[in-house]
Length: 336
Image (tube, rainbow, N blue to C red; front, top):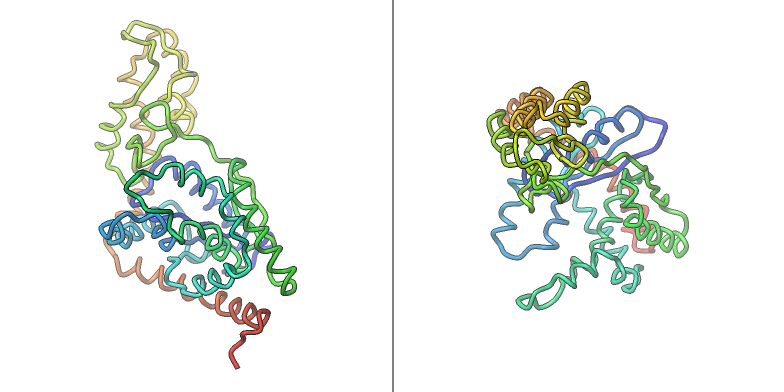
């Protein structure tokens, strides 16, 4: 990678299949922009996906999901010539560092993590207990960041607290064994809340209120036809309220030059919801057209995708091996 001056970024996503508009607007566009100023390390964190498995079928789906998310990343503009793009499990040193960090991380720190406490509350009577891997999730997350000597993590304002435990683990390690890692700092990025097609919840695959980046134009239009709009607009002749309509909020991203027209026509009932959804579908399909073409081309050449991920893993591994040697020396377990 070309040497940048602002530091090294690390960020990752769990493989959960094809990405959607919320992923693009909430993270991917920021990641692409960061490549201009930072050394970027972007990781598909498949080991993290194992922490919440419920059966073997889910495990078998992970590999396919890895390929889907990699296609979306590359099609959206993540550049293997400017960033390290790889799969977490392809660099096994992360598991080594996870184990070593777990030796110095107090259990109490992990049990107070809000996401862990939420998971415990969500358990049903069929579950015996929370897995050890889920308890140690923040330790593995810390290993992800510092294994590659990243000093910056792009997060939204609501995620800053999640990074604090990584800083605490690093601080404790450095105090015990000498300065080894930089405390990762948050790079606050604009992460707009993208509401899903139900008009209420954040866009997500689990809620089935999403539009996939890889959807065809026809699929996009069909999904939008089901979208929730202004609940008080019962008839075509009723004036609408754009400020409470999720279709209007999506126009802001995909038809920004048409906002005044959309607003005026909606509030005067000269535009119906069906027409508005069709207009939005056109905007989304036009905006995502180049991305979808790149994705189709990559999908048609799976060997190219495999090469990109292998090359990324090789670059990441070179950094990781040096870090593990340094950590082993600090701990007094260096290889003779």
